Image: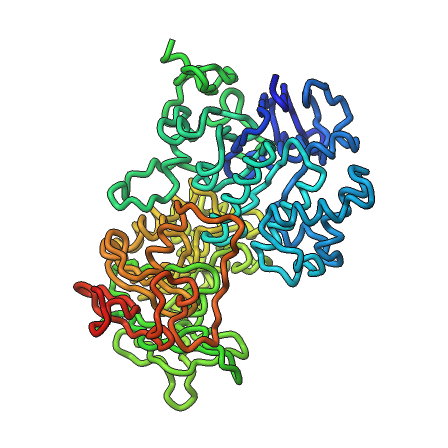
Length: 315
Length: 314
């Protein structure tokens, strides 16, 4: 049984004619101690999905099971909050500017009532060491920290209640390349030590490749392909995954000019065509894609693909 | 003679020992895309602002020369750079904030045409729609009537490019033009820039932190760190045979296994010696001095004493 099981999840913002479906029927599993990368372009619904999983937003429809328990409207309860935490993209904005590191890190323990008062100091020191910062940072405020240090503190804060799952929403996107490398290495070493699972949300495919065990690709509110990381990167199957991967500029001079260039832009989620949502940009589009909704189907062992052209051909 | 030639450009903070750019130089030829690559704080944006004559208040040009088509742009009397808005234009990282939010997209382009090409308003309006379809916008007439907030980021960047090209510039400075865009839209914009360069022979200075984007787009590349040119050469020279320890470091940063508990140190802009000294595995006493650019190949230079003859190992 997986740590987290998401079934038939929908999230719609607004009502009636102005309704925007951000997540449109997502099934997702995250195992204990694994890292699931969630990739897609802006507006695909990856952040919304992450926020629903953490309980910051209530799902419109669908079921979330955590550690065997169905969470029906219980997402905001302290018991769940202790076990599922979140790290945001901009540490400068997500840390309280008026709080010193010490307070930022001890606050979750007090609020969630995880540790006795005399234990708190010890746990703060321990987690601070875990993220590579010493006790001399305890009395600093966020503005006395660099971007990389701020993100380390944000990660430390999320780790304070010793969660089973951390949702990381673009945790390295605002950082420089060299700092990014260290944060990724840090996240991996924390996982090795504590066995925490990550839902790693990012538009940056090369970063996801370095940290994820499995990758789910999202397009317009649906997961179109999910597979172990190397299978996604070495042999993508869904035409959108293919285009997305080939669009990433490569440092390899020999592949220059071999990109698949998609035409047009992602359609607005409030004006979706019937059938497959990728139909207007897809090189493999045929009659059936315009009338019938494709669903995620197994395609060769541990991979799932949502595309008639791919899964039917294999039959 | 190069189309754009920047030599020994030195820029600092007024009344302070901080030097943000130190003896920076590179050239751009017609129809060529030249990359300027570096991490945040490397001085790549400062260099482009200096060339455009747009240095912020409190930042001064201390030395150097910028020539466009052989014409010196630095005023010897004031030490300021002449603005050449219609010969050199710039596109920015955040296209939506670079556009006027209260003016329709087509009107913004038409104004450039009226001011720079002395067109009549009706003619400029038609030409603006023409420019929009040239940058690959379907339904250009409709987009011309839209305000920036009604357009996507990719669309806004196309409008910016159309506006920049309306001046028929000799040089286009593209400062992280696709960093705020999704990769599939980035691929479309890259394609567009390549196409326009082939068509018009405009020289492009392409500024980015993304080594992949450099590899896709550029003919030659200059690597900056802490306001110092570390290495300069053709794309192939720099990517297949990097000669500066920083360049190697930058390439490895993508893949390298690092100690997660150790933090990156920042640049000291008041430093006299090599700016990379504090992170360099080959640092020695000589590095307390500013290293000149040593030739390491045909048109390939590196600012490192490792290639400097006396104690050099090149």
